[in-house]
Image (cartoon, rainbow, N blue to C red; front, top):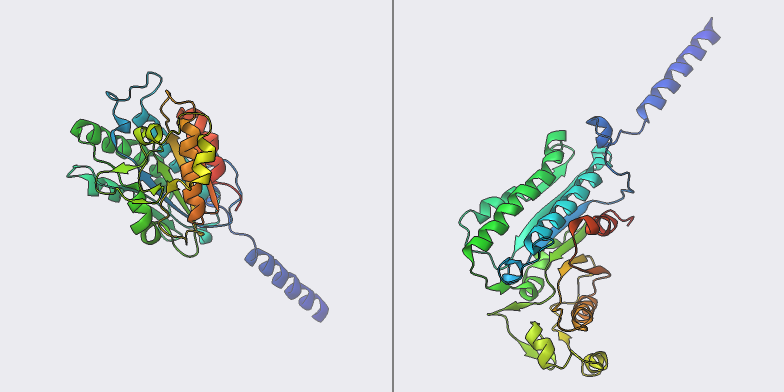
Length: 303
């Protein structure tokens, strides 16, 4: 009888131990959602999105019959949000600590802008995550970003995008946090210009426009040799962005210059490299349906 009791107690202890060590289900299993792509999840995401609301989004100035450029931006935003959702849905509940938000610099004259951006500032941890909140992320990024772009177009007062100064003064404070995989998605045509940020150091500048490309002679053979030998490019803002990954989407070169895209890519590549960004990609504007995999591969890559 004594041996039987000991055997029973040992068996009960083993069963309890196995149940206690059972791996916690993924969030998707907890909320009964199984239509998210299965991805490797080994980090917390801190995603920032910088919008270029310069005249590049104007349907009147830059019409695009297939899909207006502002609508492409909205599609990219939605795809980023979808992959943010997927990332969370594939994590164990106890490990969830992820965030996403949008920045605009400079801000357009929209009195409700702060409220809109606050709604796009979303974070989840194990105490706040829920099925409804996760699945509302993409819907918010679709509907609210549409309101932001439509308001900017209706205002019709484009003052450029101060992308260079954002990298100089704000990216460290706003977009980089310890313990996260920090991703900055920049929606831009690739040109940089703001009326209050026009500086030059040697052949490096804080701006680049189609007119600059033409004036510099980067619209003919031999441009690359000149670019490299005479040290053209953007002025580096800092050199400690090794904990930031950058995805540039929407590059839209002047089609009158066959070298324009390569010139833009050279400027951005040199700039990001000078700032010690270890992982970055620069993609030309395309339909959102064609960019979905590019965005998914970048955001959900196995880090």
